[in-house]
Length: 309
Image 1 (tube, rainbow, N blue to C red):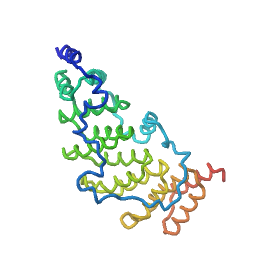
Image 2: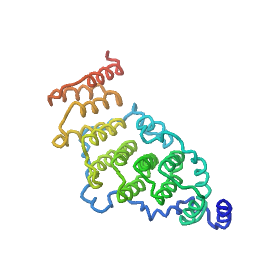
Image 3: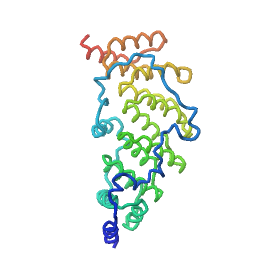
Image 4: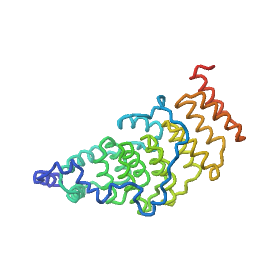
């Protein structure tokens, strides 16, 4: 009966093209705005002065990639966003979403999904979003369906944030994070995903800005988040910005071997710049930072790649 009703509605739909232009989502409910316009964010416009010279990053595997190639790179870098296994109902729901997406209004879509007899849960929504990772509009629809049933958890939010960030749909991702925060969903990991996606999109200023606004979501930008930011910047070739951020924030996050190793790894294994790697090594000595085995490994790799061994 549900399928018959759906077929009838699809035949009666007079403007199926409207959905394809995204009006079905009524993004007015998820306003396409910059995070800078969020209440209370006006005073948080942190930016970098760009004091270090900029170099092209030819070696970084995450630079200048298409959205499709982002997926294979990110799966290796952050396997936590990938569902452990597919839900048995995944294929059924994916096909259903593709059918109802032809309906002209969101209300009709949600009603059709409701009458399908399928009751979603977090694992199902996560599995469906992953299956639709190349079709972000349908993935957003699946997310909103899950939200109607109250089954959006941290795992679903993290995956959705990663997927939207990989497509460059940061405004929608911010809206989902904001709404999830209001629903008492832990948004800490989603914020770290946003930092990673901004860095992958070669937008280090926004990645650093995201670090600063974590407090607005009751998430302290602690040592773990600090190292995650430096790592995201360096692995995507924004090593100058990472180093400047580290030095500017040394009062809040004292300089140490771990943070220097992140910068050293960037120069040694991402850009393979022997001169810069040596400079960072001297800076460690000047700051009385003792190198460890990881530090020496980075330098040996750099010399090896630079054919200086």
